[in-house]
Image (cartoon, rainbow, N blue to C red; front, side, top):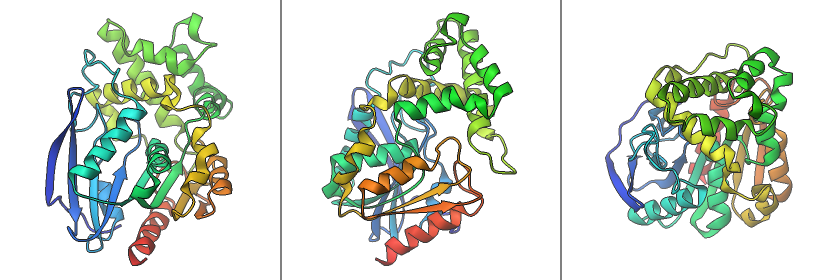
Length: 315
């Protein structure tokens, strides 16, 4: 990756509904605009994202989506209402941020949930997107959420049994994400904390089959852990606030927008078939499979991501 850099500008953008989004810009103020769309939902935009870009070539924009990171109010406060935290609201926030920064068109760079949000934005606003560089691609279909919360128990049976046992017995054969969403909003703080820990323990299990995977140190922070679990279960329980399969069905809307999708062969959180299906309806996209890669960077994935962004910078 490129050396660490610091923002040259940052601020808080009022997007309505009592929400204020943290944003920052790094790199070259006159460079090619690029927006980082972080994952989760609820992970926030961390400094490592900046290092994927050539700072002399890009004007790099990062922001924390509603309810997470430095944006306010935080979903880690159990009294904060999530009714205005939906995909439609996030897409509108991105457009407000683009206008606020005076950007006409930008490249979108996202991973995991961020790839879904970037695809939804590009399908809604194709004239505002110059290119898409996505990795660990997911589309938030019903099948994917069922895979994440239930079918993957065939690969991690003991861990999944603990995950399933974390919800009341009456909920164990139903929608586990919805069951956890209820638990993390329980009036009892002990119930909320246990549910957040159980959810994040399962997140740490299924992100990769690649050797050398280590648990995320961010989940050791109870504030981050709770806010993350609350937002993820909120979005999963509502199936990403998208009609099932919409991002795959509407891939043709991306015609004319160049894209690179980098996917790990060993990514069990986001199996490669979703990225492959996208390329079948999006002729301007190229899929690169990293044989040893899991969900996220490492095992050669970071190098592919940086190389793709470098190629867009030269273009």
